[in-house]
Image (cartoon, rainbow, N blue to C red; front, side):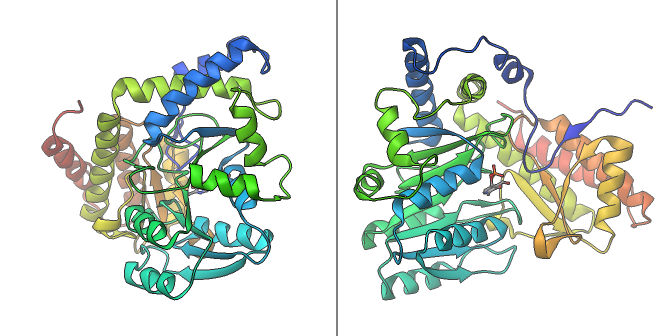
Amino acid sequence: MLIKERLLIPGPSQVPPQVNSAMGRPIMGHRSGDFAKFHEQLAQKLKKIFQTENEVVILTGSGTAAMEASVGSVVNPNDPVLCIVTGKFGERFVELARTFKAEVTVLEYEWGSSYDLAEVKRVMAEKQFKLVCATHNETSTGVANNIAFLGKLCKEKGALLLVDAVSSMGGMDIKTDAWNVDLMVTGSQKAFMLPPGLGLVAVSPKALEIINGNDSTNYYLSLKKAKKAQAKWSTPYTPNVSLFYALDEACNMILNEGLETVFSRHQLLARACREAVRALGLTLLAKDEDASYTVTAFCGDVDTEAVRSLMKKKYGFAVAGGQDRLKGKIIRIGHMGYMDIADLLGAITALELALKEVNYPVKLGTGVGAAMEVIYQGGEQK
Ligand SMILES: Cc1ncc(COP(=O)(O)O)c(C=O)c1O
């Protein structure tokens, strides 16, 4: 039987045909006037999606490259850094800050929870930090953290705020400037609908001042060099020009659909997915008020790995399992970027069929019905 493969892991995500074909355009020299013009126009589009007046630096490298460039460009040995950890990707900030020999304070929360606002406020009142690192959308758990609150605190305390929005930028309403985020990081292979390979960072003037005054040891991943080159719409080293084309096409798609519509589409798919999971008697990891709009994580009294394997082998839907301490315990469905209602309903159908096959008690259609109800109530996609 024909089985179409559909990638519904929380990144990399599905790449639209327009974005794929953009990568086939002839390569231009990255020191040419044509590239500078193209780069400048692309940067304007990125600013709209990041909701910022700050310039967005495009690095050839994955999301972690953008995280490392940010940490390594602002942190000096012994600098006090606060890392707020709500899952696997929050831990990455701790590892990075330690790599650059910062004096790291870690506030760690149960995987599946968001951070405790009052505790962070208390800790920040007791100690002055140079940098605060937080994950907006914790892909390992499907939790979206409150960044607006952190931004306010950091502004009051004069700390820089570095936010990982790798799995949410381009899919969720992220207000870089209104939330006072100094370094807003994302990657190409999630809601931006590109293949992996680009890391993006919006850098505030406050962050740039610190970056320019620092003797960072970063060579390739230097935001100082990247910003200097960007002033002439160039890059310090040879960029992945094909991915720049793809990014431009993806930005066009996002802006043509309209930011509000893109965000509400993600929200609708997330709500439909959550209601389906609930209707199937499975347990959502994140509370409704913390729920990510790009990834849904859940567990249940069932062999999740067997379910995932059936979903992939029999129905072509690739969904993710848990990472680290959640390995083998949860399923994560990515609904980011180039995802529509049919993709989501298909995934829920595959989930139900797989559950039934492993003898989980399910009345077929229960999950899909619940998802359809949300979609029906949510109205037509604009
Ligand atoms: C929230 C988050 N941060 C960071 C990363 C790391 O990005 P990359 O794998 O592109 O280096 C990921 C990737 O899954 C992520 O989801």
